[in-house]
Image (cartoon, one colour):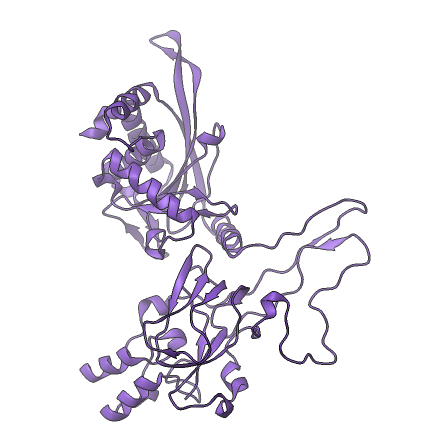
Length: 451
């Protein structure tokens, strides 16, 4: 039986993606585990592996197509010996997602005959007043999972195994894309007398969300402008941070820390470091934050609705700006257990792969805390937005010489302002103040970070 291959949700925040490249062509034989395509998500470019076996009968979405909603059919997989002429394509597409884009559409080609009353998607306005975006299609509706509805979605191999074992597929739940029953589900059902449980990663995959309503912007006549489409990453950032500011009760605490002792230690360590190792102030900030979270463990937590998740290790997300104005936070896991040189090398390596969009989801998902450093841009102080599941984020400004009072006398010191933004449901004012006090202690007496 022909199987629609659906646009996968390759990260929990992905609702649509770009089909960057097909690595298979029509007529190729495919086995489970074969890499079929490269898909650009809201965070990275990832390989898409087949979960079923068969022949790639037809490619429905050409490479280079952007904005393909999750669960949209992108290709048709045929069972061995099955012909595309015997397949009801409309039945396979029905209810599976957004309209199918034929091959060549991304290059402006149309291989099928257009309807006589077809109209362009957008029209050029007669006046310079412009709308920010055209109307978007409705959100995709998920297809029925195996065991519900009139049809049972299962791979050809799973059907054969189930038939041999006498297993009723209609009573099972699949762990394949969109609830499709695959080989591992049947094998699990043979080992246990109950239906297989869906894989957690697939169960957590979000359905394609409806696009926001277009915002009408009136531009005065004669004003020049460019209209730039949002990338998948910028759409996700806009959605998640709007949700964060709307649903998370933020509290902001700012503290000044002196850097002179840290800068002296940094200079000494860099002079003795092996070739290729060069510590930055940010490396010290990451380690000091991790140690402060261990000293104030109640602040190392996330809000989870009816409970609080308190972490055993300090997993620190480090904000990295991307060339396309995107943002990603690769995580330094168990940062409290790593030395300055190890932190420095890990951040450089992950930041480099982040800019190439080659990070794996497990390298930027999760963590309980984050750091955003804009000091290198000359920013004195700012307040960052908490991005769940993080319970807090530390916004780091630049170090600069400022007048300070020491022992009743005026002096000059290198001072850096840092602002803690925290989820008040997890880290309130008193707890946040304890965390910043611990952080200040490590920064101003950096030798204690070596203990």
